[in-house]
View: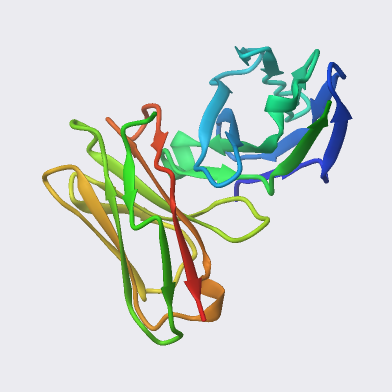
Length: 114
Length: 112
C-alpha cells in the first residue's frame, strides 16, 4: 500500500535559519506529492505540490522537488520566520490505486524562535 | 479561506453515544472526503463521496458512515462512540476526484 514517512520531530530553529524537513514515500503507481501546513487550532492548508518526477513545487519561499529515483519530496526554506511555526505534513495521492484520497505522514512540528 | 465550513467547531460526547458532524462545500464541489486526525498524528482517510455515492473507504469500521447531499453539504455519522474516536475530523472537497482539494477547519470531537 501507499505510505509516507517524515523525519522525526519536533524541529526548533532560530529565525533566518535554513529549514529541511525530509519526506520519503512508497507508492505502487505514480503519485502526486503535497506539503500541507497546519497552524495551531486550524485545519490543513496546501503549501505546495508536484505532480510528476522532477517537478519543483514552491510557495511562500518553501520548495520541494519530486525525486522519483530516491522516492523523496523534501521540504526546504532558505530563511525561516517566526510565523512559519506550525506542523508540516507530507502527503501523496495515487490516482491509479486510490483515486484522490490523501495518504499523510505523521507530521513535523516546526518552532522558529526570534 | 477555502470556502469549506464545518460544524460544530468543538463537541464533547460520552462513550456509547452517536454523533453527526457536518461539512459544507463550495458550489460545484461534487467530491468530499473525510479524515480523522488523532492528536499528534497525521490525518487518516475515512471515506470519500462522489455525487452522493460512497467512492472509497479507509480502514474504519461500519459505525463510521456518511451522506452527501445535492446542495454540496455532507455528514459524517459515528455510532457507539469510543474513547479512541476523540480526534479532529476534517473534510475536504473538490470539484472532481482528481482536482485540487480544499480542507475545512475541522471539528474537534472529545469522547469521555
